[in-house]
Image 1 (tube, rainbow over the protein chains, first blue to last red):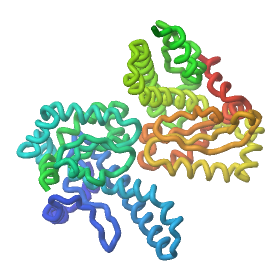
Image 2: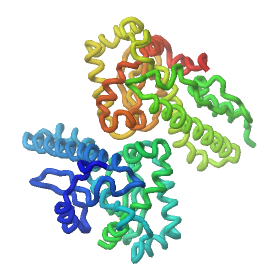
Image 3: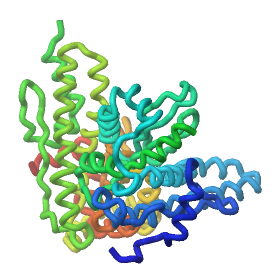
Image 4: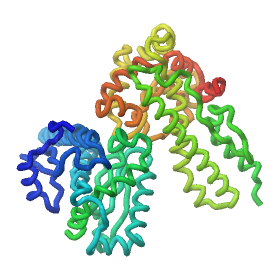
Length: 228
Length: 249
């Protein structure tokens, strides 16, 4: 792979690592959403997710959501300043779509890690215990999440979430399109089931993508979000 | 005691659009089995605007999966009916809508495409009455193209854009046109809606060739719209639109 694919310099990456930790790095500079740097190279999730997919997914798709979110926020601010509440309200679907796209992808990138580093394996500690208790076993959880992913009709995401209204109980949920996980549900682990997340490599064989992605799940991130 | 004959009749009647499209559906225990329709052109016939690889996967894999899963869902539905299991019947409904919709949408889609530069793509030659109504509604073909393309680009997630003719009860002779978008595989089967032509905006319809550049796909799809088919559907009824495939099967 050409080095031009490598987006972040090592210095920038280590700075990001230091800054990231628990919260999604949905960085807002002077009120503007910006595309977060990945904490690994585009080719780092090979062979499970190809470099080409990662580059397009991050630099094109995610960037489009960032741009769409900023544009929606600008429109709302302008409408607000004029007292044009009809206009402001009309932007709601676009705000939800692009804002959701930005949030979802920001969480997703942090959910992933190279198989040679933190990626893959089983969750341990409190999270591992909770998953085993609530889903029967880790294997059963993976099976249930893959079934949820396979059952999405169209574009969407499947999430492992924590329900604040139910004593932090775990919940397996799906969301259409870019609808974000909000309210009492805290997103812990999301898997993107949009075709652009896998099609260049897996084509119509999406079940293979759902199987493969477990090799690059960063359980450290999931555990941090669970314990937060 | 349940009268199975009546139930099957009702079930099949409720699937009328599908049945009309797949005239060779075989009957087994009273249940129609739907099959993948053949394309009216080769996989590479829409090059360079839609690649042969996309067409092959789209038809032989994606459309086939809708057909297979539709048949499975219908079978499970009938089993649920015969065992008087209403929760199980309801549980099959999303799968019937999704996969049945996928089968209907793709069957209509293949037929409303044609190789670029073929006579069928010559809008003003082969679609005189549709063209007149399009210009009547949107001012010009460019005005229509702009509105339709904007609708396609506005779809959030997977879905379709359709040009439909409205003909609700009492207005069967209506020629009123409307652009609608539908999510996922929701089909255009409303009682007052005649699908004229549709454009698939699922990523699988363009991604291998256009990647994230869906605006280019939307621009190029106009080169391969089969206006002859669109004109026929515009002149016909809703039943005609769904029945037209029967003759080709």
